[in-house]
Image (cartoon, rainbow, N blue to C red; front, top):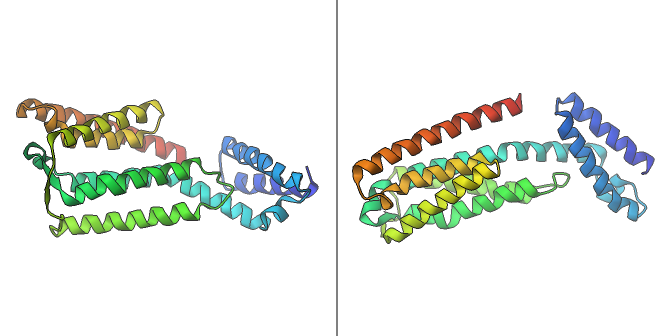
Length: 237
């Protein structure tokens, strides 16, 4: 390893130690950095020369990406939770219908937000994630527009759908809930439970039983939100 590369690693270690990052995260940064430095070593170049960036720019890129990585699950959950709560009117389920805005959300916004979520989570934070941040910002703006449109009754009409469609959404909710618990991504569990709560009437025809099940789902959702909030707070601390 070149001397300048060693100095860069030491500077990064000192900077993030001063910023109060956990030792495990700092070690992860250094491991990723050493692995990435092999590319510059193959070209017999200093890492900063290979990246065409100053040490300060590399450090700031990592810091910005770590912040984005940290808030990504929270923003993902909040945006989708609000949109499902506002746009998916469960009173239309028994009539085999749903607002047009909800269809737009389920087909376009939800899959796109999941795609960006994983792009941010899986991308190497040593490099800029500007593209992902721009798309995420666009999704947030569109989400705000959808909420405002719904507030003023601009729902793009009430669209007739089959009961099977609502049942499909219910099973998507079940899959998201289980996957969220299994992979320890509770933001997906919360979204999945809310989708189940919105579509429970498509699975249970007895209104009284459906109401009880809906209440149970709300309790589970509340538990998930409280636990998730505690976990995020302790992680930030």
